[in-house]
Image (cartoon, rainbow, N blue to C red; front, top):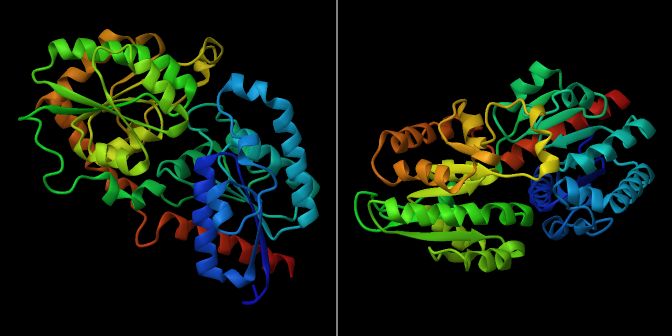
Length: 394
């Protein structure tokens, strides 16, 4: 690839987390290839806009989660898919990078591959093929040239399932360990003083509505049984903070509700244990060294799909470790009594608590990627795929 060849890269994300990944990728690509050589197009949010992307439409048009929400917005989503595909075809970029949100981005990639097969496609963030619908992996080979994985076990999963070529580029959390982990003396010993308990009921309204009730009742039971008093902190994302405040009013144990990343990480650094909804937060807690109990409830519509789930755990920390050290209470097991029973051993120096702490100590080795940051490694692979494509086209 000639050094000064101008390049057009389209990046299509579908939600805020993808917007953050996209912005870091854009920044790393500009540092690696030169900002004067690059032109960006696609779909993104505020973070990607700061790096120079003019989004085709607001990210909020398609950033919906859950089956019922997707169904309600389906006409708009389908319209945006068609619009995005047409825009990609017209722009004729040197590469299309899709980021997460497979219900949107993979439909875009499939259609682009059918209409313009010469445009290389990179998928940044693997769908959970290792958890459910494993048949998606081999199908992705038809429209994804290379997959950038955030979790270290995903390349092996795709090799086993017949997915596209996959490289582990690292999770963005490994760049933030100084923020997530306590400084000396910041997290006091659980053998003295009041305990600090984190409660994380999720970042979606559906999660908050289903988990705040049993979580509050579990804390009431825990208050009766705990060997020492404890303080509860709920780090809340802004769009569900008010709902959390409203629902917490019914709790007998009154939490402190904090907003913003700085306050969230400060709470993580002092926490002794956590009660959390399943999600990325479980990996955040594991890397922070906070023993946890994980719970989840879904709608009745989603419950009928549970037989499709193939993963040995819903907890990302368990999956990375390859062992189920974190208790998980799902659906009908997510009761106040079981939550309290599982949390209680984590509030003292017990084998259950120590088992989690010992396991979390392995995460750094399992997730390391060397001297590159995740976005730098991702940008390097993007450049390599571009180089191969350009050579093949000459």
